[in-house]
Each structure stands twice: as structure tokens, then as C-alpha cells.
Length: 139
Image 1 (cartoon, rainbow, N blue to C red):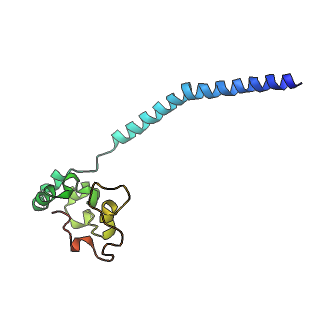
Image 2: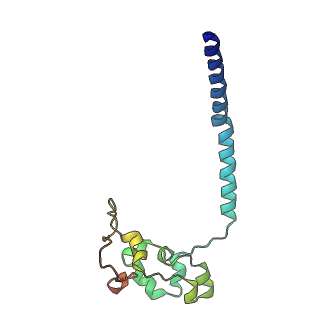
Image 3: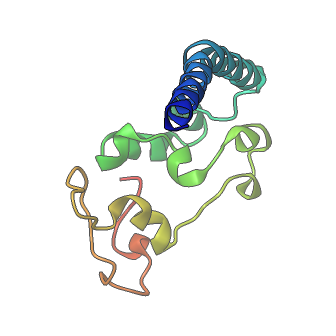
């Protein structure tokens, strides 16, 4: 009886291993490749939404000049102002985000252990005061 249980357990283990082996090495890669191809096709079919800061410079040349000479020169305008494709078309204040809140700046400038690449401040740094009171974001 004990031998029979061991043999049946072994057969069951071989079957389970065989199913898992087949799924991992035969079925799963095909599913992953199909999923990746669907995702790529979906993304490639989308209309681009983001603009480069050179597009912004066409109307905002003075801001652009200040921006490229300061710490934020490696950033695109949309990092702080959001997607700008509608603003590039409508050219209104309502079509672009102007978030000059402290929280907006702290997304990048909040002191976080290990963050050393950019100037950072603690959350207690001038609480209640907008950063733009003392700092010029563009220059």
C-alpha cells in the first residue's frame, strides 16, 4: 500500500512538473509576446501629447532663455506645467497648468534619504509659504 502511494505521488509530481514546465517554457512566452505586441500597437497608435521646451520657446522666449541657463535646464516645461499640446493650439492661460504650490516643488525638492542630485529641503522649510516667493522657478 505504501509503495502504491509513493508511486502515485511520484506520477502526480511528474505530471504537475510537466504541466508547469510546459506552461513556463512554451505557453507563457507566447502569451507575453502577444501581450507586448498588443501594448506596443496600442501605444504606437496614440497621438503624441507632449511637446519639447523648444515649442514653448516660440511664444515664451524670455522664460526659455532663463530656463536653459538654470538648474531646471534639463527639464521639459511639461514636468511642472503638465501636458502642453492643447496650450500649443489654444494659447490660453486656461489650457495649461500653472501649479505654483509648495507641494508641486516638493515632488522633486523634498529631502528624501539618498536623494543627493538636486537641492532639497525638509518638509518643515517655510511651511505655508509658496516657493516662488523666494525662488524663481524659471531662472
